[in-house]
Image (cartoon, rainbow, N blue to C red; front, side):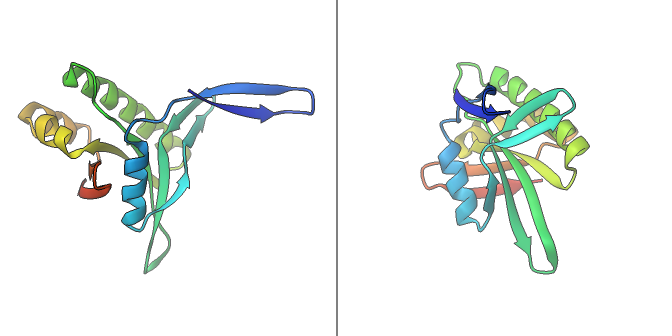
Amino acid sequence: MRSLIINLSPKISIRRKMPAKDIYHDAVKNALIKDDWTITADPYRIKYKDAELFADLAAEKPIAAERSGHKIVVEIKSFLSPSPMRDFEIALGQYILYRNLINLTEPEYQIYLAIKDSIYVNLFERDSIKDITKINKLLLIVVDMEQEEILQWIN
């Protein structure tokens, strides 16, 4: 866990625990930069009423005809546990929660789940996962973590 210290006054501060970076964090960040994205937050703070959460990254890419460009939030998942289906359950729940909170606070952002290419092939290409992904409108970024390159955007 990383710590964030917020000073409220010279004598008072609050220590908040920030989630540890995913093992693929830097590879995904570098892949986005290589794809001409500008990282605007690392991590991206999601604050709504009494809820405060942190997604891994926020990025922006200018679009020639549009001043504001395209804005995304990226949640990175490694799927390292012995049960990829359990990892998927957790990732799906977190994705939906983040998406809903972002829609309430900054609807100009789209949230993407970034995954390793082998996870996409071995898990996300399964018919059951494809159906769940489609029903829940998961947006995916498939990344070659070794080459730090985006292989596919799935909308």
